[in-house]
Image (cartoon, rainbow, N blue to C red; front, side, top):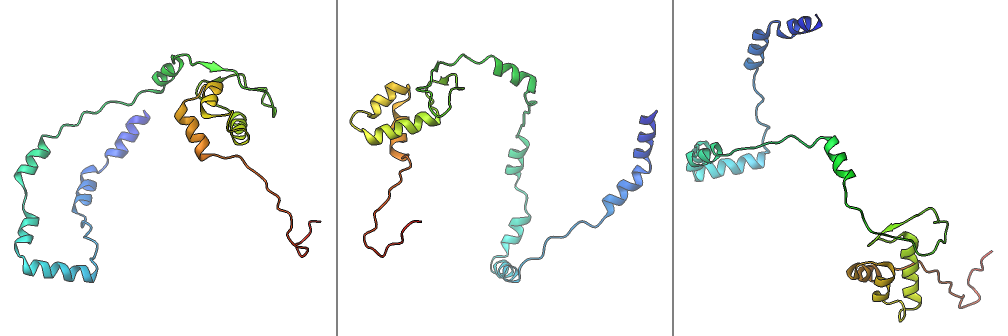
Length: 175
């Protein structure tokens, strides 16, 4: 019953409303900046064929436009996406190195990945003992890719605090 009422309200006086909408004055173009309009008038006065070129329809381009075909498909539903996620291939995992800093709750790490603690540890080991902790040893120890390890060693450094002794007696003493 409610659909009949809504349909009646929606279709009431539809012809007059459509005619009123069609007969409205269409919005005009935005006013051009005075410098731009002067340049346009100058160009049109020098080259009057431009005005005809702007208004002319190009049949070749129109035929290209008619040949355009758009094929659309519905997006994948969320049920199919969830089903695809559950059928992923099993990944290889490794156990984390050491259990310091309260990271005991971490059960396994995917191969090719490291935890933050492991990253800091390997960076610090490389900084302190670069002869023993080379990129090759880190690749074998943590099962990472060589290019990733080289980038890690090149672009990341650990935090280091340096305390410089005061050089003269006028330096401010810490309280």
